[in-house]
Image (cartoon, rainbow, N blue to C red; front, side, top):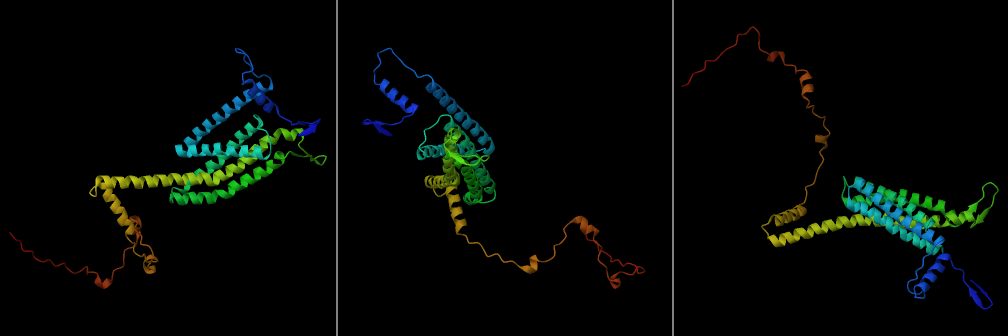
Length: 310
């Protein structure tokens, strides 16, 4: 902003000027039957915006198909895509913080690249949760998953943001001749893409470590409470003699039942195991008998007469 001859000069971009002219033309200054359209850079920008919009929606559709085939769960697939959509809020925050205009080409490309990173983190997290949920309670599996994935996700995020920070700040380093430059033409070309990825990845990390586990736990709580409420209504509507009421009473009685104390007897459990294999039993040597207990071979066997009964 500069002042000259009592006038204030404020620099504006081409998009801002086109928006102002659009607002003026829509006030009815043109006669009836006269229409207008923008050509040149505005037309190419509109075509690029339409192409990137279609590419982003097509990428989301392909991601949904792959996630549905991998997880076999509609809820988990929608949850990953929801995290991708919410991560775009970080891109808008980055544009505001860095005071950069929204570029259709570079910022849009950054959003598409960000979607791949967010999907990767959420896929690994949900897959780890499904592995843990096979042999432990699901709420505990969510906690163990967040504990196991927090370090890899943070390391990936920090290294990516640190690598793109010079590009986001417009810093160019000359490794051959030495020195550096700020906002060179080459750095300005990639500045908006790096800003979109850095700020979007920061928001996406919070979504991956907080939002995704919370939504997984919310699903479990909803299903659990819905089951309790349905059984309660079934008990109240069908009476105490119904099967639902009997199951309810049995579950409550099982919770009140105290388990006995298990005691470990070392004399029993530390004994040598008994061989139960039939082949090993047949191969075992026969026990030695006392010679005095064996019958004399010269002695004649004696028989007792058996009295027949009618």
